[in-house]
Length: 281
Image: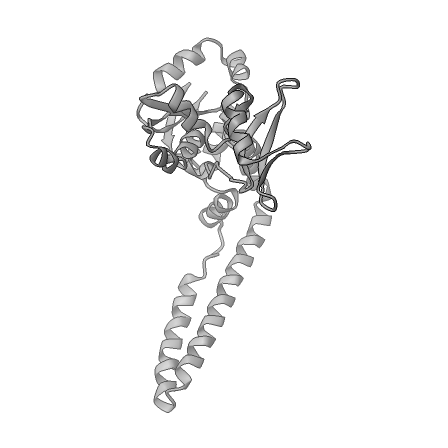
């Protein structure tokens, strides 16, 4: 395999922490080893264990934590803070989603005056099959192009490869110039006609670019085979609409490529480079 390109993958990472306001901590049952949420019931100011009759006042819950700390586990918002209190780290190395998750919790560390570790983005990569790479090349695309949204990618491809004029911006510029003249002419007759002329211009602009969208949509039908190939490559590179590393098992690539895969990864991955590496067979 050989490296094709380094690329960022930020569109695939989003906010990781979703806070349920009534959930504060988690309780683990010793008997069943099942985690159950504890939420504050604001009507009677008590903390209740989900799907049970167990409830605590704030004082009782604090006493329970002191007497049976092994029964409690922090929730997703507090886990990194808890982790750094009991096992401090100088740095935390994680994937893109993990780094985003930790960055959202910086205020927690500041509030409790706990040292926040240095966040280091680990290497991430994409392995592209020879067949997929050939399809990409035959369509005059590049592998980084496939990090675009599929609709955007298809539209851009159609605009570049269509034999028909699909972009109406030049025509709109001419129409807009006509409206500039009309507006000046109308204002001389009646100044109140200026806004009316501008409103008509806006409606016409909207209609022109709606027509452009229809032209592109119609042309896509003429290139259905090519666009299906884009879908196929996109599905292979980003299964389930997510990064390959989140869906595909490393073992499948190792079985196919053998020990050389490890050598290629070591050769092409550059720690602290903070780039997304694309490898092609």
